[in-house]
Amino acid sequence: MPLKNKTILITGAARGIGAATARLCHEAGAKVLLHASRKSLSSEQAAKVVAQSADDFLYQDLSRPGAGFALFEAALKRAGRIDGVVNNAGMFTASPLAGELEVWDNGWAKTLAVNVQAPADICRAAIAHFRDRRESGIIVNLASRAGHRGDGVENAAYAASKGAVLAMTKTWARGLAGENILLYAIAPGWVETRMAPQDIADRKVAEAEIPLGRVAQPEEVGAMIAFLLTGASPSATGATFDINGASYVR
Image (cartoon, rainbow, N blue to C red):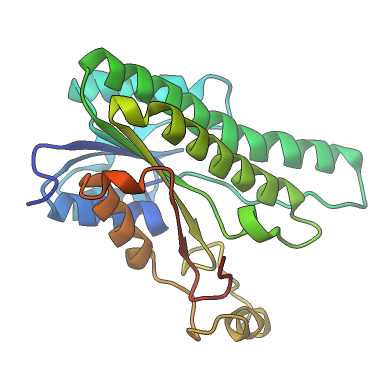
């Protein structure tokens, strides 16, 4: 089993891409450490799939200062060592150009806290852990197609946050490859999660721009993440993998 004896921390693992990744890593032999912001029916269901309980989840609100560090410390205390990290947790909220400034300020602040600061803090803690062990470590960061091409005019905070994820992934991949610390980014387009268009008309518009003709399934993204966590392709460190049905080809 390609991930046997590996311990993987996965943020945002209660549903969607995170839950799919957890299941695939578990099936590949890994011990998975699951994170969610709070206990829910979704966390109970996701835990059951990987032979755990909802109480085994590591619950942490990543919008709070220092939450990324606290989460990694709790994961390390639970497992003793961590071989790979998947920074999947994220949020999408509008940053409208018109309207109340409070909405604008809060949208940017919370988006950057959850989508940039928390994963950056987790990366910092993970890199320190890998260095202490003097062994290889792998980090996979979830970005977005929006980090490359931008997004809707009301969603600049989200697009900017994902662009930042791409930039920090490339930076650390370049700087740490010599220490066998590997980083990869995943940049999905629409994926069948809560963030995908639910309105019938909006869904048709979204699918019309995808040459493949449909949005991606969470398992498609999870399969790529699980493969990267095996360490089978170290020379791909620093790469971004686009999963968008050819809707944005670089």
